Length: 212
Image (cartoon, rainbow, N blue to C red; front, side, top):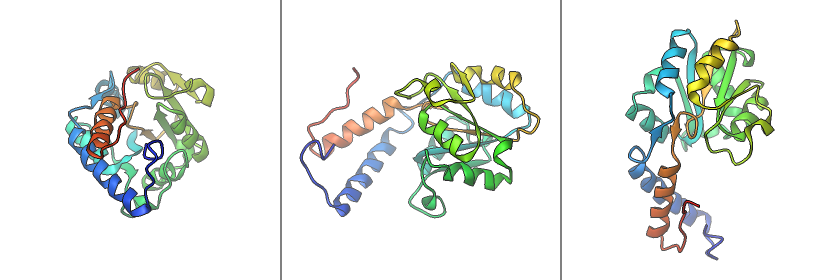
């Protein structure tokens, strides 16, 4: 956005703007976020099947923890991995690199063959494939391209279809299910739009993220 406005920022100024953005983002975090349809029911079912569950997301880990806690989802997940400026998470490359997913496998002490990734974007599918993990792609999220073009192992229309997909494709060695957040567990587009527009306004930028 700054480039488009012809405003060059040095590294220190950019980091300052990012700090401002994080503060604005936190103000809108839970008020502008909703769960995707069928999430609680699907997670309840999956928990009864004895699979451990984790969240692996490029979202800031503190924001992720806040959203999960606000909606009463935190107890479903034994592991939560997200973006952070603090080690050890800061040492992990973000998706579509496999680092975050491989760290989740390490924490559970399982192999890639014993896990399935559930996500809504090409980034999720590519990260899972890079980690050697099977992947279920969920429609209705934020992928700009058809999900089938990324070659997921299974494509479902919504999160509410996950229990049926699980029953149809149960694999005896499946031990861990790994979920993305934005567009998979939670609808966050309105959050992002509101936060970015307020940050743009506070920074004096003539830019507005509108709904087309």
